[in-house]
Image (cartoon, rainbow, N blue to C red):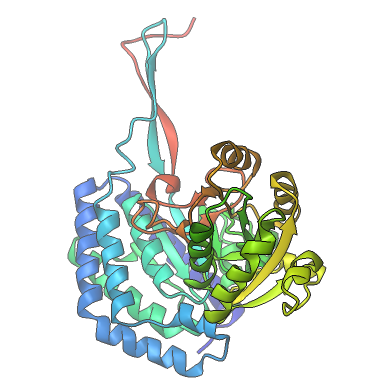
Length: 420
């Protein structure tokens, strides 16, 4: 039953106050306690897998979106197990609060240290993928932060079941039960209450489509760590190995089309396009991919549908690939600068100089050489999981793991010094 607007605000304030208390305790807990709690939570996820899958089936029954988004929503035993393993992998990481960020001694004898500190209370607003809640909770706990989660309405029952299992595991390990909380309903006005919760939330992290991110950036009174759309490019250079290019592009586009790391635009060098493009089209067509191609690409493969300008600025999140032929690396870079979202862009080439030039020239959060753009993922980066892919320029960029959810402070140790 949806709450009234004033009730949403009241509930958010109650949850925020409890989260702040939990965050204060988490910041003081030893790393071993936090890690043990994550392992306990992984165990309860495995134990409750049938309940989680049954809850997910309720969500799937009412889902009416595309097949790609349905794939993001769907849970099975393997995906629940992957969530549990993700928690264990995060637990096995070094303590982000135990790092030395710098230490120096001043001429007057003062010893100054820069030390990590949790951000405090995080608010996470995300769409479709229920496993995001488990990943976010793991990274928050590991870094000593509390978190309030608001998943998409289409994954409401899945999110509740996952959170129930996580909370039981954390509680069994002695962590405050309000360290991880979920929105009490699907009422969109609770999102507004989160965005206006200045003083209660220290950071809002939106993870979803362009509309969601723009709404959060426009309405939030809390700092935002933005996860922009994945308008990702794979550029096949004239010195690319054909077999490698075919394998990498097929994976970058079709492994999972609904993830933000999927390639949305193929840029192919004019020098190799006549020989290579028909092979790439045949490969991807066999996998069920459709195309939007510029005039030069259609001159080589006339069967390809024509692209319009907006296609190159569309995050399809589906089995659709934009195709453009470019004269060389500089034209590829110019296209990426104009149409990209600074998420992930890749070059396929055997020319090391061309690769280094490309990687130095893009402004994307992640640049790749001879690798699928779908490797842009916290787990693949060794973070165990991720809370999102940040594409802004402030605080953190790329996959967000435990280290990126800390700030720092200074400790000054003296022997009685006074300032003249």
